[in-house]
Length: 380
Image (cartoon, rainbow, N blue to C red; front, side, top):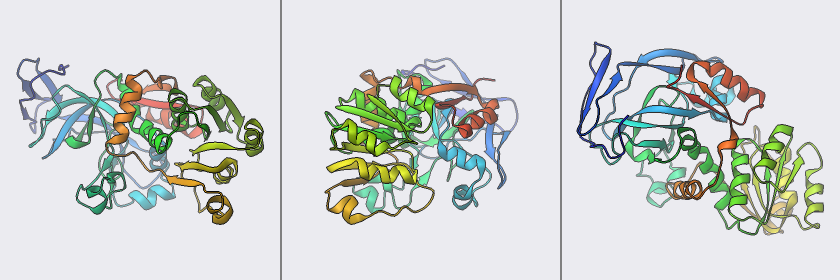
């Protein structure tokens, strides 16, 4: 393994024959890159995926080659694996595709025009592939780029032993374990949703304690929120929320609004972070928010949701934020600072499996019995 301080001058030659290519790096040991690798491929428009031996990609202009160490699963990956209506409409023309996007790995080769991130550096990936030229990108809103592409959806992703990535999308993550470095991408969703406005001393309700909701619980407590409520229909998720610091956990199948109103003396909470996308939870969010409070909407409903704009928002002065992805790069700096200062999200990771056990990983995700599931491409 190359050290962070290794020289970034290298000669890369991946040949058409032979078992490995050689990168020679000054002041470092030689590193051999195979010509082929194992990758999880969405090959056909149907449920499932295939573990295939495919060529190791070569980094093009502006790209780096990364040897992957950890890749975590998210809901988007499950949509693709199941090949549901969203996946069919979003990816139907892009198959075959290596999917997966929440990753961490070491830089092992530079393409033309790169070198800012030294060889051997552990990096995570900003998965928004933006054009940097549209109106949004030119005005500091890159996360909603007009021509946005997503790693693992519109371009080959991270369920593999190696991947290429635009160097400007790499986030150096030395000092973090690979699994934690990979979690920075989804954690950024929680950070963005939480800190879109001031959170310190505020009462906060987090609706939906999947991995991102659980991260939000930990973030709110770490940032000094006054009181943190967490709701979910699954007992084990409520238990995890309590372990991460939630002051009050509530069964999402019950009368959540009445419980929170009772706990807050009838005023409701200052902030709601809606992470589930469930229609009932979205309506609960507006009913439990105090007048003049704010709501961050991150969960994606499966169908349109009708709101009473007059009574839910306008007359009550409620501020509503739609949260998509992370801000480039403001959210990443906040996320890195939280981890550096001691925020612990490791308990959210409940399973670590080799890439070959991808079917087990997706079963765990489908059943909703896991926290964060991480695949380890280097393990067999």
